[in-house]
Amino acid sequence: MVFVEAKGDEPRKVSLELLSEALKLAGSGRFCMEAVFLGKLSGTVKEKVLNYTEKLIHVTDPVLENYTAEGYALALAGYAREAGAKLILAGATQRGRDFLPRVAVLLETGIASDVTAANWDKDPLTFVRPMYGGRVLAEVSFSASPIIVTTRPNSFAVGEPLAQKGELAEFQAGITPAQLKTTVIKTEETTLGKVDLTEADLIVAGGRGLKAAENFRLIEELAATIGATVGATRSIVDAKWRDQADQIGKSGKTVSPKFYLGAGISGAIHHIMGMDTSKVVLAVNNDPNAIIFNYANYGIVGDLFEVLPAMTEELRKRRGK
Amino acid sequence: MNVVVLVKQIPDPEALVAIGGDGVSLDIEQKFALNLFDEFAIEEALRIKAKHPGKVKVMALGSGKTIEALRTGIAMGADEAVLLEDEAFLDGDGYATALALSRAIAKEPVDIILCGRQAIDADRGEVGQMVAQLLGLPHVGGIVKLDVADGKAVAEVAVEGGKETVQVQLPAVFTAQKGLNEPRVPLITGVMKAMKVQVARVKAADLGLTADQTGRPGSKVKVVQYSLPKKKPAVQIIPGTPAEAAVEAVRILMDVERVL
Picture 1: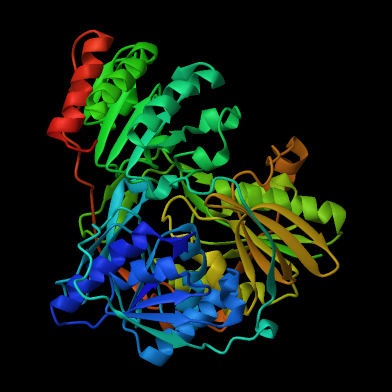
Picture 2: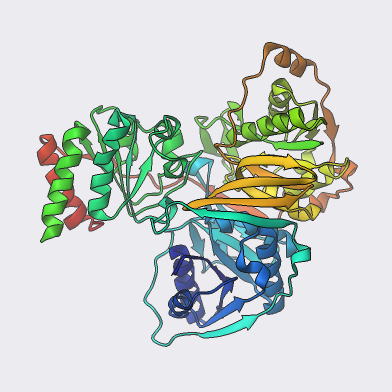
């Protein structure tokens, strides 16, 4: 059973990653799979999700129109019980990480949070999760059922859509407003449409080496050229050059993109902990001894004020072709 | 208003972590600190107390150095400290830890339970929400603002791409995110008080918990083995002038790695 989350008219990428993974498992004949969506389901999201699942269960209780951890937990646990789910997968998004621990308690089981790999061939199944900021990997198994796992975005690949779309079914969990002690008063969207750092494929991040807030435009220009999301280190955020939402690292976000460029970033452990599962890392720093080079695949020892604009120009030239 | 703050003493982010010979234990350098996010939780509790008189109790589960986290809480201004200390509690997962803590919290009436968004050692980020569910309470995760009045609380959460404001009935659990406040630095008088404080000790039996409900036996999720992450190959420095290196970097990213 895969919990599917959407942002606007798009299913979250991590949800499609998990549906793709679940389809592979279903293909092996050991599991049957279904997707579960809570709350208001738009036509676009529905069509997109049905490309990746044999069955989509839409839980339609009106109280689920706004996210509350209490309501979502009751609904998902309620349906999981009804369906006899053995395995519940969800993205380790802010929401997934927020309410699935409650689902675990309701179903008297445990949870493996922020998992980066799964061993589907092992019996019992095991899951790998980074600890101590990624310095150790713990392989864990469950001694309770169902198994509940949240997975870090970009840990699995999104596969090909199904040749034949899945079916839609509705379910009422029977949750009343009186059961909830939480009410959402206001939701403000500040950066609608921007790819969140945690799900970004491409990230361009800047640190102290940029010397002044206005120089961040070098990062923004390069990011815009390749459609990347902008990130920053803690000191940049603490200096209020960038918003807290842009912070990568232990007290910010954990990211796992295909490509990460870090410019003017020394590589403090707090920052490294937030980006060390990135696939390809390019570091630009004028200090050849900067720690970030230990965590990079490629390095340019040089002045970022020259390197970044030259990269932007070359990328524009090559991508313009 | 009575506030309980759940805290954790964790290895310093720079402490060395090695895997034990058995593959299921860790050797961690003896350098510890209070979990970063817990400082925000303690600070918020003290600010609530300043407006709504009551008691701030810091509570932790652990052994050895865990008491230091409680002393930090007292030094900052908390009134009482409770330590869940028992061999039986060791090596528990999120569920076993939350079960013990929820039983200990339930011993006295409480209005607000605060904790950090996650502990940055095990990185689970599960216990606060589980405590809430075990006690049948609402929770708000990752708060950046909290206002308490008339048996209710209004909290702000920075969500992906925006901000959400929610109201909950008290008692409730809140997990603290960076941005909630600026934690105070303990005064010397607070440190003196912390050195002398009587920390109440709680054992599993005091909470009515049996051996199969605590620690590793009581865990629903168990570590099979630890391993070290694959080391990245040594960095390849791209030579040349900044302009040359930039062009070569673009070539590698587009033609060799094919990530752009």
